[in-house]
Image (cartoon, rainbow over all chains, first blue to last red):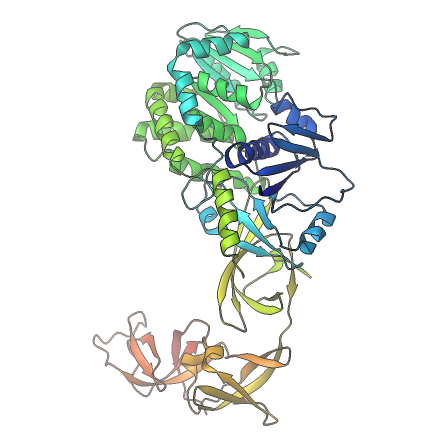
Length: 383
Length: 190
């Protein structure tokens, strides 16, 4: 009997919620032979990441995952062996009632947000006794062995390395997207929230004295880009040059193609959670636009990651990295910090690969979840 | 019901019919402006401790424990007997008194609080400040009078605590019963 999983995903904004849960669902099926239902309240968001999905289909099977539209009126469905509420989303009350009625209670997990902060290790895997007698467990992704790890498919790093070793792969992929770059150009991808710091970064790239080709998938940063370019509208395929900078708008990519884009670029600006993790698997230098939070709580999370990520760098490279990431996340001028980054780019590239290899030595989330379930079955922890 | 965000040290909640007292809370911001509360708590019946995590808006069941003023009477075979104003006796074993046991001495006159859960006495709380006599300590080696230099002193029940270097045998001292810390010298109880 295959273990059954219900993963609940409420799309609040952007693509992080669906990006993470869709990857997890796929991996549980493909690598652990689990039977997975993914409940999503916004199928349009899934369609952007997975073009074969159909927003009109209430139930569809995609890559072995049973994808369901999360309906307002909850249908009577059997409760799965493992129930995951992604990012603390609220499960349907009827479903929770059914969990209490199940002959054997399911393993109930809250898959939390990714953070590099120290407290995460101390909270990972802890129970949360509920009023209805059920126990929920908090499962924290993270960057250290004391956490649940990161989403990483088996063979991902090898696949990426094979792609990067043969320049023809990059060329073919870029050509498919209609991207032609000068041989010496520094290729950069830009995926970010709205950011007033963008203009100064673009100025720096335009005046860098070396060709830079900036690829911008359609998204929230486009308005800032239009403002800097002085145009009213930007659409896929648009190409603009300013100084040594070429800006090109590309379509919003599927998860698989976005990986290839990250692998193809010399430098990747990413945001939120899912693209942030994928950029680390790309083994290339990155710039993270963290999800902004009230009371600047996100800046603590940014610093926590920087502390880990910069540990292996020289003092000069570390200073350049910290200055650029802080400027980008505090809407400060980027010109000086970008110049500093360019000077240490070879070291940052080496560090990106080392960091990737270090992380790849840890367990990935899907395997950690399957292990958590097996251990829970053997010895259910009680408060 | 109470929100998990309202839990503080010494809050008592009911889980699976068991009363748990909160010993420590750790508030952290998770992602997207949500927050969690990591809680260390102790089972008031079994004495076991555990750690849990709650979302800030999770609901928990608070417990109002009954309390009654009592004074220590005597101990016998690891049972400790306390008495209320009406001379009713309440027996607790040493395990129930784990945190206060080091400060229970014969002849103590502190007014304590017996704590009841479902009509059964489950523990006793001491006053925050208690006064005890030093029965043994080494002399002051350096003549320090600042109170910053500490040394070990023994109470009449054998409990050892750190006291100011100037304290002497026969001195009475104030102790914080929550953490066992020496506070100051004191007058002997009347």
